[in-house]
Image (cartoon, rainbow, N blue to C red; front, side, top):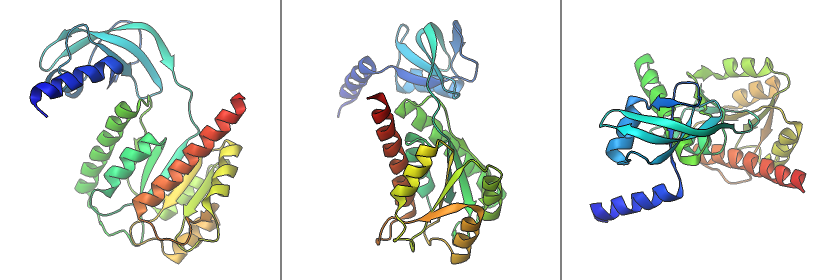
Length: 269
């Protein structure tokens, strides 16, 4: 498509949905200046202009309408209009994900954010192939946090999930056992006779936080499964087929979302 066609399509998109931007300040009525990276995105990429409507959110569940009052290449000033809105908080979902190879974690963070993950907890498991050094961990964490922010803007989510530094399974289980009200699910390829759906339904109905453990590409060692089970995780499977680690995590998260929405629909009748 031509550059002119791209600009015309962008204008059409802006007409149907206000662009979303994250602010670091507490949202109140008045004027704001967008963070530098988002200001550059607004002016140079989106080519927004003075008067264009946008939506601000603060990563804590609040959002407010605004419009651009001044714009330059690296500075964008906006002014709010109307009152602040707060979206209802969802039950927390903590995803303990065995660190996979390559950029698979990018997709897990992106789609997991869309599906409601509250905390991404990378796990250092026995079969994890990447052995991240300290400097690489920091780089990866910054990347994953940026992906989560971008996903929030795209899916109209107003709270940004946290991405934590990698932990061992033992440390993750210790955090889990310190929260006796939480429910835990561990997906295991050798648990085909323990379907996932009943576990999800029970935990959604309980209203408690849901913690999930997903292994890396090579799966989980039997002793890791035993340790998680001893900590209180329910072991479940996705049937006889072997699925990729990113597929397993998204299947669990999509199942939680579907059950939640089904329960919410029934309660409104």
